[in-house]
Length: 261
Length: 317
Ligand SMILES: Nc1ncnc2c1ncn2[C@@H]1O[C@H](COP(=O)(O)OP(=O)(O)OP(=O)(O)O)[C@@H](O)[C@H]1O
Ligand SMILES: [Mg+2]
Image (cartoon, rainbow over all chains, first blue to last red; front, side):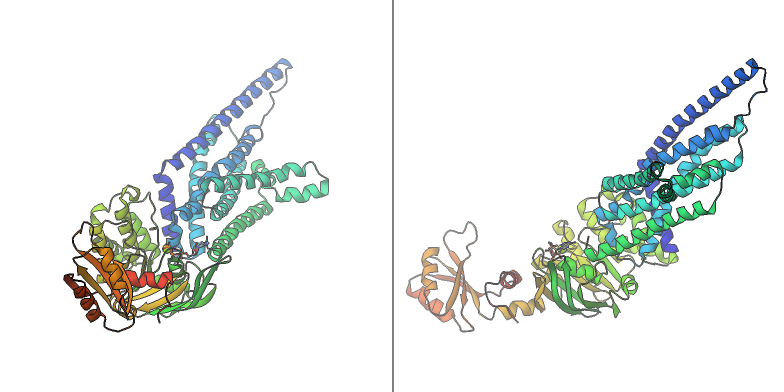
């Protein structure tokens, strides 16, 4: 545990002592902020138009749901941007150690590969949580000026957390494969896109096959969270995805010892 | 303390280390000498548990590097070829981190870090960010990293690379002072380093051990044939030609110091153990030259090294 914490603390410090963490968080907030603004203003405009129509036809104003029409949309956008930003967080975790040779220190110290993988994974997740925490400002604003339901917001965040952790677990894996950070980030991104694309393809093929495919899709499992539905099958899916990523990292590090690079 | 038994390591089809065996006793300094690509780093990586051996076993402090790697890791300090430094960290924070992962007790950690800084002369840069240090200081921090947990065994891969002459001497002194408490293997291709610091040398070439002994013994064994320095006041070519034609002479090597015009210096090597001095002196006098100097020359470790690794003659046992 102490050694896990040593790795974890070093990684977290190194994130926050370089400008990269701030740039990534800043860009993420900027881009989600822009979409937040667009989504909320179009929702407000839509509400006003609906109200006017209702007055014109002398009907009761319709009850429009901010959860369904704005927040869900925002979550979906965030899940997309994460696929772009999280690989930038994970890319250096192992590739940099390979490049500078510090991996030799790690792998000749009395720490297990599992301790180092979990330390690094948790550090990246921590940075990711900081990112998510900042976006809660957007939600708080909605609660101040409107009356959304809390439930779907919480499940949405849980979904984002699980989805993001899955990205990170595979980000760790891809960074064990190369000493080049750009390659690590790009392959993580392509991998995530592939698991998204499975979802799109599943809509086009026959229903039977489509069902199987969509059960593998990273994003299909997120839909329910965004809707406010909490289903253990989705949680299990993401947890297995994370475990898989970490397990592959472990195998990759072990086998690189045998190969010698 | 360290036992290496028939270790062989392949990279794909390349055989980097070929059936290497040697032992290092407790408190000893062993020099690991060899030209580029001889397999020094690879052998050290096997010893430090970084790389598994393809064949053979190695033990450190009685623990197998493969089956009991965590026990081995607790007991070794390793300075790899490129010091494993986190460039963006401060020196003290870095050593503190290393102390943590090397299982130094929290209450002893500050002391351990201070001692490592002190021993390597880096106390004055302890608050600097590593990437702003000069190469020599980075190398020292690398050494401090290997020492911080006061390990039984130190494995140093070319520890003096990149240091200035004064630092080299300091580091060698440091390494010498560490022997006794620590068992040390250091690799190098700088020969004087070995004769100055090590009690025993293993010479490795193309993955194989070609010789193993103390530096003195190695030079003695090889200079089974006697070698002399001859200084004469005659043109070098003439002297060289004349001496070469004498019986019992194997080799004549011109060795004039630069700028030396009047005198000719030559190194003369005899065949076998026969005394060649009388023959030399007689011939020089007969030619009417004046003999200024005739002194025995031991073979330097350089000669031994070249002799062993270039294979112009039969290998020595
Ligand atoms: N990771 C690796 N993958 C493939 N080949 C390797 C690897 N590491 C070493 N080799 C090969 O093994 C041989 C021995 O290399 P090694 O680094 O052990 O030599 P060395 O004695 O340390 O040389 P130097 O003095 O240059 O450091 C070389 O031919 C090298 O190319
Ligand atoms: Mg080497």
